[in-house]
Amino acid sequence: MKNLLVLLASFFVLNLTTFAQDNPPPARERLESLKVGFLTQRLNLTTEEAKAFWPVYNKYQDELEQMRKSRRENLMNAKLNFDEMSDADVEKTIDNELMFRQNELDVQKKYNPQFKKVLPIKKVAKLYKAEEDFKRKLIDMIQDKREERRQDRRQLRGGQN
Image 1 (cartoon, rainbow, N blue to C red):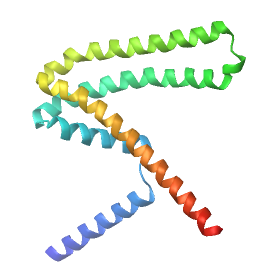
Image 2: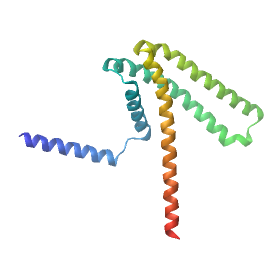
Image 3: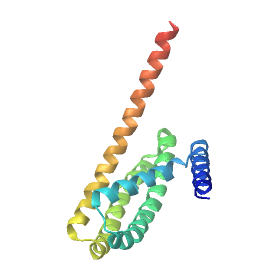
Image 4: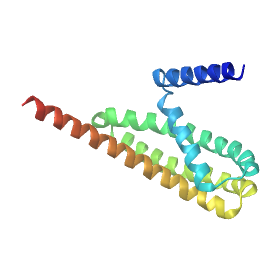
């Protein structure tokens, strides 16, 4: 009976692994998963801290993401239509960007006291540092991936000549 349970568990895990490989989670989900792991490790959260921290942090991120989505749409529109934009439209785009930055700061100020309620102040400071480190890590990963693709293309061209 024990061997049967081990066999069934192994089969289940193997199928989950195969399914995960055939159907990888969307990039956003993988990114969020990486970020959660990164922040958890950097902040060294206790179980109690994690229970209190993640709901607050998720609301914080949701609020920032709504603002960022609107910003992306505005910037994409400006990028696509820049040559046809009037000076007034360009000025409005610049003003909107400055307003976005201020609003982003306002959200950070709004949530800072909430973070301080659920985490010791040193972990709050580590949070902000860890967020910056995560952004830097993502940029480095993207640059590394681009460089790998360039090298692959060079090798393909070199092999065809």
